[in-house]
Image: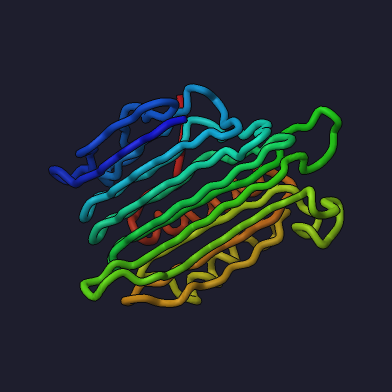
Length: 276
């Protein structure tokens, strides 16, 4: 079990923590800055090393007006056997005017007989910017079988807050239940074992950008598709899904997309998340 609260504000041209609280098996390492943009990077740590049955991890993140946060994890999120009940992570995110959040966790690894649910709720302003990149992979199984986990559920709910109220921009649901399918057949994840997901919400998202990101996926050992959300108060989103049999391949694919956005929108170099 664990709870983490993190508030980020802009002070003197740099984003800094204005509020920080943790209890149980969640905490963050000391902040660091990867470049001179003023964006702060925090690394979430789970000292227990894994999620187990009935575990609940709750995170509350707020990025104030004009502040910028890069949030990642120290290592992969591992979900082991969850007999009796699933493991769950709930995350609430609020972004102010001109606020920016890049959520870039290491891969989620679901092991044999694991059941995991993740719910992320984001409320942002029309001038906010959100990038979320995730990879789901199956863990090693002693008998060598593929997809030994029970299920993985990922739910992203994104709302836009305006002076006239709060409006739903996108509801992204992903449910993987290998036990109900022939996981070696083309009817389930097209015969692939790993899934990558990228969610981008920004006023600069449009069909041209979606086409350009899709072009970056050409020639890779992955099957990729992109869809656009509706537009609310001038802000839109896109969702990229990619299927592969390699964690590294998906990480490279997603990183090429996020690096393009970082360079074009903020003049930042390629992301280098060296973790010590």
